[in-house]
Image 1 (cartoon, rainbow, N blue to C red):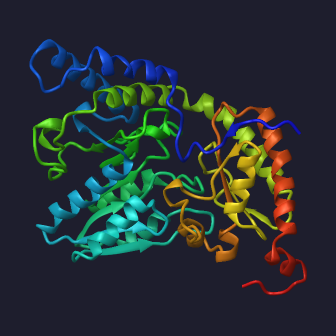
Image 2 (image 1 turned 120 degrees about the vertical axis):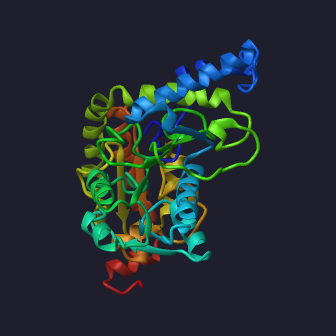
Image 3 (image 1 turned 30 degrees about the vertical axis):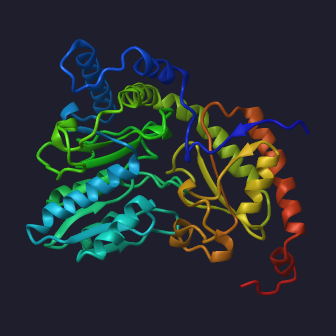
Length: 396
């Protein structure tokens, strides 16, 4: 079997595209002005920032004045949640609603707030990976300051009923934030039509560089300063702007959102072939709904093996994959996402996440489906857990 290289972990990060890189490079060497300077080199840099802001706004149906550039999705999440919490506490509202399977950028921020006198309700998710909008409605109280629910889950790819949740929040006059880091560029987003008040996104998931993100804040919502200092980002986030990264994000999000349907039409059949092929192995299960998920995402639990061993052996065969989110890949604990949908610890430990784009060809899919059964067979042959399973013995 010929060894090849297949990158199937785009939910973790993506390569910077050539078009993005080409747009960024002049800002390192020629168009390097400080956007706060009044001479032409600085004014040109500011103009390029505003052009990128317009592109980001257009991609999600927002107004450019509602877009603030940040360093990443985690920063955007922190700013949105902590900022609203601080503002609404002045009105006696110190209750926040989120879900049990959010990204840790949201969960750890909520845990931080709990230690500072806030109350957080963590709504459950269904076995197929969805938040029930009625659970949000029932959790909203007079002192609720914010609802924050991710647009699409980073591990199992399920796309949440954002418009319904947003409508409930709008009806109840509660601010609604969504972490859309995994969704931008993969689903059609319109913050106005979907009743989204704040939205976080990150560049490195859509072929921009690492270290650039954005936060949409609906007009009429005022956040406290994230960083104090100069007057950058309309006096909300001090610090000299990262012009090359901002320009790159503008190009990346424009490219990512201009042909979503066409891309998904290519990716989805290949994803489904991967799902069907891997599920032919005994003691496997698909995590998350089969259809209401990101086009390139599949997450399958394979019993009798450890996810880390599976990833290492796939890597030896030239396949880059994941067993969960990259932010926690160094942890030996099972995924909180998989536990939240009801998987047992030992089953959650053996999960495989593949996240593909259109550059993964039908031939690549054939290769992956050729490699995985061989790797699984080898790992199971060495696994005492698998041996006990085959003997019908308990392995808990």
